[in-house]
Length: 162
Ligand code: THU
Image (tube, rainbow, N blue to C red; front, side, top):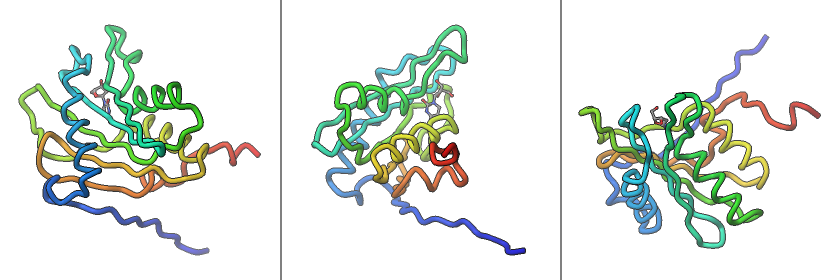
């Protein structure tokens, strides 16, 4: 018997001013694009902006539905759009932010939900290259992760079906 351990490192910034100019720009856009979300049911407006390997950027927001499970998260909207507009182009980074209009906090990072973690990992496996993830609210702390795999230990992939 052996006990295994899974750990990962991420970088935590006190605010966006310490990010590289490219990362800061991406996060600023993710914060702003939350305005485009359709979130009348949760009042939780999420924005995601993707930087592609060709330098293009693609954005997405959460799109809710009166039939709640039909709604889609910002991350998956952005990923589907990126893959549809630029098939085969690598995804370098995804920045995720939100605007909580329920009177709650807006200054702490959120991380992608389980389905989005699975989805980002699928794109990583497709491109055989990690996708960086930047997470932050409208202000305050920023977390930067080097790969979606760190958010999904023991994730199920196509390899498991070989
Ligand atoms: N949501 C996202 O778009 N991304 C996340 O990472 C977390 C949750 C959306 C789904 C739903 O529309 C709202 O936020 C509240 O859960």
